[in-house]
Image (cartoon, rainbow, N blue to C red; front, top):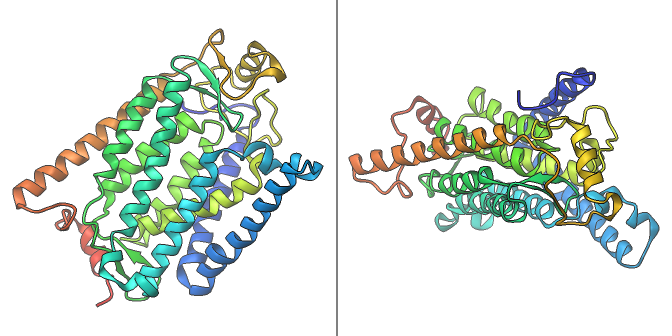
Length: 362
């Protein structure tokens, strides 16, 4: 059992997770199928939100009460969330440029862009994992988002897994537009990479975004994976960028949707905690009290309250092992075929690859 989802709020928790999953799948379909859908989701809405975020920042600096009490300012003002949001949006726009042949998107030298932006997103998460290890080694610590995290070897293992995952991306120049112009395709990014990425990223959210991981670690990962395996073969990375950007925009504006506060308060009964908080909300309340209550500031540490890091350790170890195996297989195939796996396709014999390649526009 990874989450506290079998108590009095179980129906709300499971039900809302399914709502988020279905919503992300549908919004991704809206964004990918037409230029209008993509323009609305990744140009118009982000521009409006950027103006909103700037207004909040200016208002907070000038002491405006509405800005100081705004939920985005209070709970989503850390560097990670903004970095993740705009990195994901950059990916969505770049992928649209390749898909539709806009500007530099049709140039051969631009083809490694998907690898570069995905690698940047992974590195952001890796830094966050290592940060938690340094700040809270075998103890609770309060992150800049007001979340009690527990650091340790799980962060180190998953941070290394993330670095390996970057080099599990193969055929950096082999990205194309689909025949029907609905997708940017990366055929060599087959189910092998999808699986090891999902394991690593789930471990990351479980370690570093624990109060959000029921949604951003399960629903958000399942949405692009279901689409890529069921009807959009070769388009997983586009699905992933789209759903990530959509979720980040929503969570940045409505963080109370999923948030559990540093004192244990939560707004909605579908907020869900993982089992590293052994007694759920009660554990957070104990940490908060041990940290001095309202006096607890970013970086505050607590050692007197027990944690349950077993699941984090197992999942992070699994992420490290599976990514190491995947990279080892890539190296093996590359040596056997005498190819450079980052310039040539590796998984050409897989059915998934063949199905994706058949969709490439000629």
